[in-house]
Image: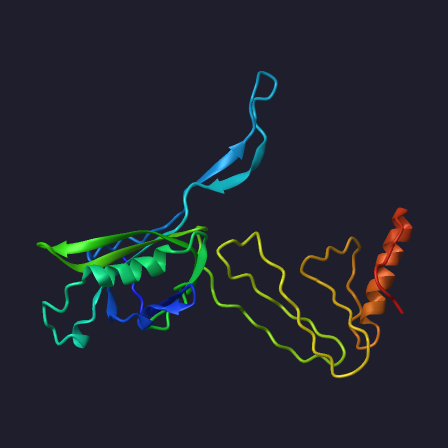
Length: 245
């Protein structure tokens, strides 16, 4: 199944900025959606005393393939069949643009529809450009893009919040990898002179029953007290980095 799109950007250049105007089509009209879901488990060796091998995690056996089928836009050429033929010069214009990078690059798609399930960003390279011919004339091109990962990416997700005393922010993991995530980039724009304390409660495991006292002035003090009391009871030493008032 060829990927349908309105436009895309690759190496800083838009598909729509080409001298020749094209549209996205599907030559084969295939309903199969390309996936890259097959995985292998990395395991250790076994012997007579170790019948169960050690497991070191899984690896993807392939990456996500994307095929883009394009033809000249009939509305731009008055449906003149001769003008719809893609010339060698026009093929060269596309191939030198798409195949010049020698390392993976980002490709960003634009769609005619607002489909939240459709990823916009992928990383990889164009590994093949094929012609689609009728008789002896070329009327279309098949552009093959090979991703470096089995997933696509969304745009950056931005959460803005104004904090005067303390605040809790919940960031949901909506990615295709539920057990892994990237820590966010935090940008702080202070309106005055003071101190900022950040505590990640999602990854914080409280080894003591009870809850923190969430008040405007004692929230961080309650956290420090809880840590120090637990350390004292279990023979640990607490060391802080930075300046604690």
